[in-house]
Image (tube, rainbow, N blue to C red; front, side, top):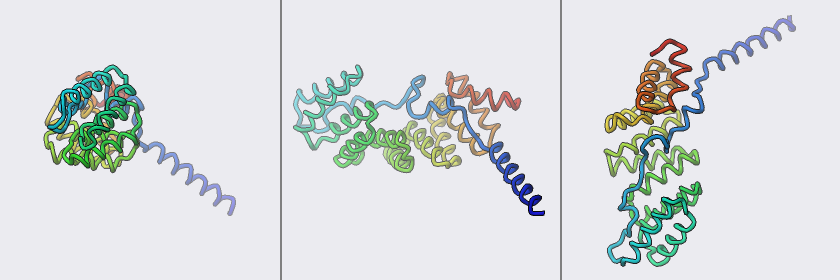
Length: 246
């Protein structure tokens, strides 16, 4: 009897494990690559006003320093750009734009902790520096600090309520916090602002899929593919065509 009971319990564990594995939702890795910076799509970029002195009492030399740093960043010469900004900040320690650009350089170098420190200093000097909030949020995303990222993107939305990228990025943070309903709502707003932004369609499809709405996911992935976003293809082919959902 004891022997039979042991076999019965083992069988229950195996069946339970099988059910768990079969119901587990997983997206192909290719589908998850296009989150913050999808190189095939337009992405958020700081405006020209971020690459100029943030104070009125600076000279022509200061503007030249920002222009030179921006050029070097564009060429990928991050260390040389960093040298220029270090010199500028030493002379102008109260200019938040200097700290923002230095943080931006660190983020390009994938030194996210250093970038966040610079953005914090930029925000100490200018609490409405939306670029600093946005890129700080992105740095937190890369560090998988999704709650902190959520706070940053919310700040951007409070300052610029029509900033499509802020809603999109906040949706990414929420998705990674398993808050799919809230994520879908943010992707909805992003798409209301720009209905052609395919990364939002792709990631709204991901959130719908993870929340159990396969029909909705397939519709979003299909639209995303039509707009040229290849990130949606593998999930659509695997889950939608396989289940004859078009």
